[in-house]
Length: 477
Ligand code: 6PG
Image (tube, rainbow, N blue to C red; front, side, top):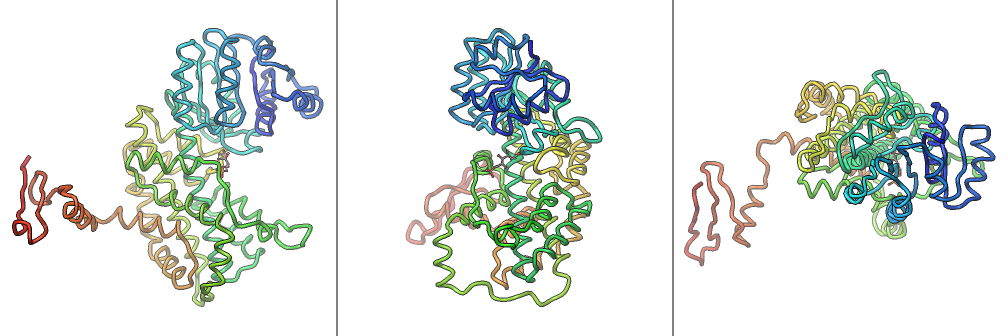
């Protein structure tokens, strides 16, 4: 009998099956198309402790109890379809793990539905791409706690290992795991956009070639502040030469970014919960804008383009500082969202643990997560930007950050996410924002009422002189 089952043999599924087997567990696999299964067994899984099955029934029969079946299939309707097939075949305490990028509300619904039939369900975020799946991803499981304990021996071995343990932890009940993975992706969008803007500033603003870009990003990646997986792959990308044209491949790639939805979901959830996430929101917008390629090309012929090169000194270091500050904001937005969601949705998230399991394996792994882990360990409820470590980091780079945004504006280079994060920081640290005027306008045109700073209660004013000469009415608390 096999110890672990896996459905879905696309690259992520294949790699996870190989990873689980490498850790000493026998695996049974099933894929909708038998040819895929045969080819996997004949090649990559050859002479491994992995058996092929050709129907859900056969897979279920091949597994020891309680059965543990990981789904690595396309999120959405296919997950429901496979659960529907499996459900009548499974017995009490068997466990289905959905390892796709499922929408967290779907996961919550599936958890509820499966609870009734005593089949356990774990919604698990898996991050790290194809290599991560094979060598050690970051795993973000949520759902039934007992079911997690049953799969823990496998997950702790399969996950990426960092200095203080495997990059997996039980995150909370229901859809907590998929919610955390969604926010991980929101942060991923934010950081990718910020890196893209830094690239644009150096390429367009300074005229750097790809060798220079490679050197700058490599140096940044070597610094504790900016060391991260995304920085590392960016440095690599600049070095890759397209064999067809003998030019850097990145310049041959169409500048229209695609997306599968997780960034969007993060923003929608943040807006629903009343959490500002401007860096992440702007990153989603930037991908959408980039997809308007044809219209942008037309507009570039109507309006003048970028207005020139930067002539001053030390711009590379200033961009580095701005990038670091803005990245802190992207993480802070994500962490604040997780805190709010945890309270409202009762996930009971431990943000220090979230930072810990993001230190290895996942796409947003970065040296700075060590500080976040420590900060949330010491003060779980602290707002990240107020932690002395990040406060100091930002204050010492604020002048550079400001200058980069000002310079970019002068040069007509759009840096939407870097600007949004600076505005986020500047709004966050203002004790008085101009939304008193917004409140006055709302009350003026819609009698929506307002609160006063000098007395409690809810107030309304007849603002138009024709109506009873600006009478203020109020009810004290
Ligand atoms: C990960 C990634 C991954 C995601 C891709 C593509 O953590 O390994 O987040 O899960 O699917 O990055 O996402 P987009 O197509 O939305 O960019």
